[in-house]
Length: 454
Image 1 (cartoon, rainbow, N blue to C red):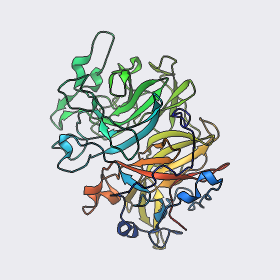
Image 2 (image 1 turned 30 degrees about the vertical axis):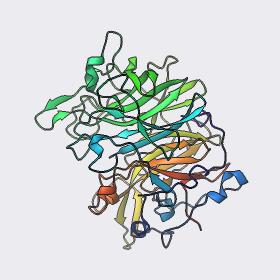
Image 3 (image 1 turned 180 degrees about the horizontal axis):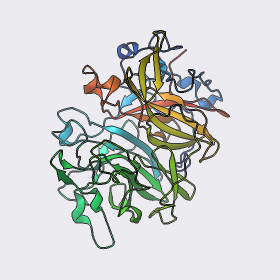
Image 4 (image 1 turned 180 degrees about the vertical axis):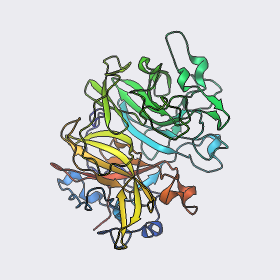
């Protein structure tokens, strides 16, 4: 979504959360335990930088990047902390009561103006009771809404669409009985299936909610255990709660071409590009797909053009280029920001010093944090600048502007590997978090997690 699509006038850049406590963010003690790289802060930062916001015409400077290119910036200032972030109090479903919060991956939040009022929406990847992850199956997409970022956050009211069904669930592979002639809700390739290895299979990942031309859309992907793996789009016939249907271009398959990828259990030809997102500007909208690819939507929004052989962003890759995911496009200050997620791998240099880098893994490499890396361009298609670390542990995020003009990123603390998979921390992983951002200004403005006082 473009920064103009939400319709909010920009005010002080970091004015959005004054007086709101930030519970359950990274504790200072945990931050101090993080390994440091060259140039790292000597201790956990404290305080906030809201007094240096854009309203006074002053901006903080860009930080020098670690060299050579592809080294990760692990400075503690770039971590979500108690003073710059919070876990959103999403309304609990019965399945959430034992944990006491919503288990969430790939967390997404955005803010729109609807009927003259701000409407915040939230969604993400969730799991079913009895499973420790959102695989080999989950039961669909849930949506929460609020009038302010601090809440209260309520499950979307779907009771008028499916009386007696679980509130807030706007789409699921189980909704096959809602298919009608000329209106597909669940395509055959999205339905649950079974095999001897995993039993019930089929999960939906990484949903995003977008509002374009006064219509609600959801872009999401079917995950690794599905019949076909890849991204698709839903369109609502009503409000943010639905009812949603599949667009025509995804009835037979996900977006883009199939290729060899994913875990070994995925059958050849079943894997397409994942982590689809939408970007809109004015009367035009684009699909942004798995970090490198993009395509413009048709004017009727029922498919992309072209639907095969998609163009690629002009990027400045790492060498070697690691696996990246979680692509998101955001426009601010007249610049295009291409957000991607990459694992920071810890290894040891020949001289015995610690190396933190966006690497390809391998012997002697250990996953540390799942970071958000960003590049900036004057043009949508690029060329994009070298990437920098926007936030430590904030990977698979999106950036949004609140109704006060403040900038935020989501995060979820990836419990699959690395820092948040440690037994002492895993219970705090998969969380629905947001962290304030700061913008360093034009002409070479960068976005960072709000850094501590220096």
